[in-house]
Amino acid sequence: MVHVEKIILREISLPLRERFQISSGGVLDRRVLLLEFIDADGAVGWSESVAGEQPYYYPDTIDTSWLVIRDYLAPRIIGRDIDDPRTVAPMLADGVRGNLMPRGAVEMGIWELTAGKQGIALSKLLGGTRQRIGTGISLGLQESPEALVEKATASHAAGYRKIKIKIKPGADIDYVRAVYDALGPKVPIMVDANNAYTLDDTEHLKQFDDFNLMMLEQPLAWDDVRRHADLQAVMRTPICLDESITGVDRVQDMLAWKSGKIVNIKPGRVAGFGPSLAIHDLCQANDIPVWCGGMLESGVGRAHNVALASLPNFSLPGDVSPSCRYWEQDIVLPEWTMDENGMVDVPVDKPGMGVTVDRDRVDNLTVHSETLK
Ligand code: OSB
Ligand code: MG
Image 1 (spheres, protein in one colour):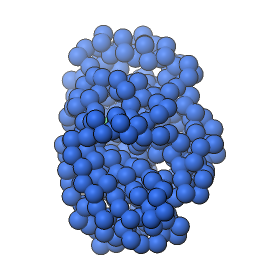
Image 2 (cartoon, protein in one colour; image 1 turned 135 degrees about the vertical axis):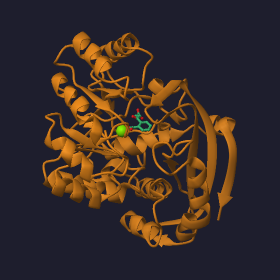
Image 3 (tube, protein in one colour; image 1 turned 135 degrees about the horizontal axis):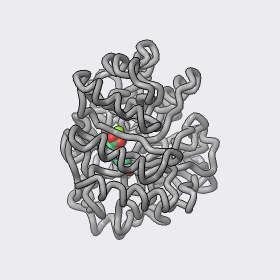
């Protein structure tokens, strides 16, 4: 059982090593919202909101997350006895519209705290079965096909098991062809459009069928499921939904309409681990592989993603790259690493998320904080 006495919100400023650009926006100086949960018995849990600086991926931003957690979500948690972390997602969803990212941050923090108090790994509490998970890399939009080829080649050589290429109109077919020609047909590559196309682009998008891609991620509108079915019907390349999977009901829609064949689960996007498990199980029952996406998380959010990705139906490599791909120095110890085969160890023998927050570093990076009780 957990009994949260207070939640400390902190905004830290964590610059990325290089700018990360997607079709709808870009970021260099990451603003990260960290949540620290303090239990009545002194135990501590951590989580992170995956919201961006701007509402260019989702409606949520780190500022709206802060406000919603402070005014609406934390009061539902603080001072309550919580026997089972599975009860938290429904508690936070009750009457609340949207705000999936702040809900996810709070929900995942309770799971982390619970695992720590029980002395078991978060991955175990979630039902994870893998000791190691495979990772890919998500490459942001580049200046030229040559620049992209250089990054893709280096990533493949480093061991990444999947090369994900961000695309947008004007930086798509030629860029992907250049990578395909350079790396050959055996290297797993995929593309992510972050909603940059419409059905008017159907003929154009069909050209991607030439490159034997693992998948085409979220080509159409961020909240669309239905139209993706029209595109999937005429493409060989499997469509993967990211943005539009807000919960298990959207997976049901995807299955009913045949809108896609793969699902990207980001626990921070779907309001937490409880909904993620439901999506995982429904996909598994329907032979839909899933993989764990990323939102340029610090080591804390990464820990949560690694734990989730240890579940059995996470059969494709995730966007859970090592700390050094993003940061000069992460905020957790040890930092997240990957071996030469693109595998990340799941800390199965350590309680909770399995890494320690570097408090001095967090203090140094903190821009502002607020204690909720
Ligand atoms: O669509 O998967 C996405 C980053 C920010 C917003 C959206 C996305 C991404 C990524 C980054 O692809 C993946 C990572 O964390 O490495
Ligand atoms: Mg995506």
